[in-house]
Length: 254
Length: 267
Image (cartoon, rainbow over all chains, first blue to last red; front, side):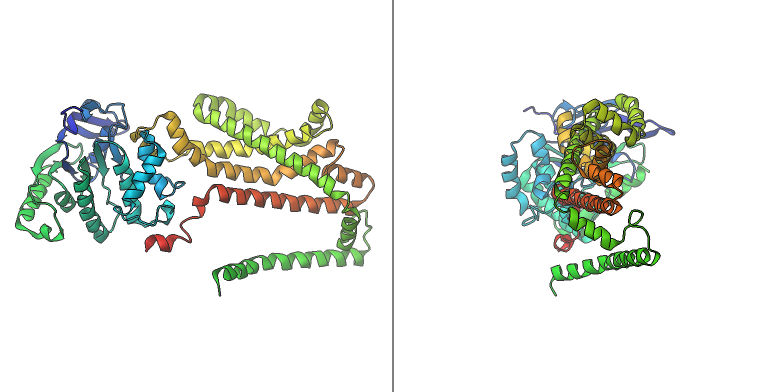
């Protein structure tokens, strides 16, 4: 294991070909320290998801480098555990089968992966649903199952693309507090993409604010609020001040 | 009232109109044949067809067994060839462009033309009949299995790749399961035509089978027996279709999830 940061993005640019060609990222740079929870906030369509795809090894940057744990992700997928926006559960696998997909593909023996998954079902609110098909689960449960699949993937870095984007506000708030707890027990490095400022503030050690397309990093804001952070903390003065900073950075990048 | 009884009651109401209509049609047929005094070698009355069925019930099972065996072996061959070809065509777009038009053309060779040729090549045994069933059944299976392979959700493929899957793992975890519903859709079409294919083959020349039974009855002007065979063929085709449907349900239990289990999931 090296001392390299969990994620290092240096001057990454990416333009989607087509008419007109769409410049998604332009000279984007950011760093996620080991064990940190970092969020990427920006307006819709600013290239946040594209950056995660680059880190997941699914998109090739035109310029710059993206490294996960010191390894270049260009053309090599599977360095990080990636959770896309859609939950992408396999409809033909039961909950448990979906939970172990990442572990299975990474070469963990299926029996071992299943044991690990069973141990976490309760923590992920899926107790008693291990034999349910994805079509039988509610939106929140599907999302937690996709998160369980991501957490069970044996990688040091997690890439989460708007994991709660499709959920209603109340479920979302619950899931944020729950994710905070799960992550604190887990301790791996996370890069979370979101357009929800409060979500970013509740969960993160640091927030990168991105500009509108083509996406550039406008600012990095350290979130020094004590943990655990609950719903009540979102009403504190310090929280409000940090939120103002993020909003200010967002409007500066417009 | 229990759920099962409720479902049964609703189901019987669904088939009731069809049964009433069928009974009415058979009655009208009987009445018309008697009233107009139609000769039995032109159109036999339902009562006469029934009598012919009772008369032939000892020889019919042997013919049916032959035809059914040919249909099942033919379907099996169609499945193996169909899945194999779909897999190869799915892997290479160049091959797909080269072979696909030929496949479509091959489907336009009439089976009534192929059947005598196959009899000349392979004799009067089961082989040429199995081949006809396979030739008819192969195409729908290739087309819809290939469709399932090619239209697998790109995002699922990307997800598997992002989790470190190689080509073989993507095939096993994503592409093959994605093609299963298409395969069964094709197999259902093939199953519906399988018995018919076997009968066409037997028509040309056979030592046993429903097709032989029909052609013998026809030369003897026993139209009542022809009707018996037609009804048996229809019944067997429906049963075969239903069997494939049941097999599909067993193989893809997830396709029927989410209706009954929805309340549980949203609790």
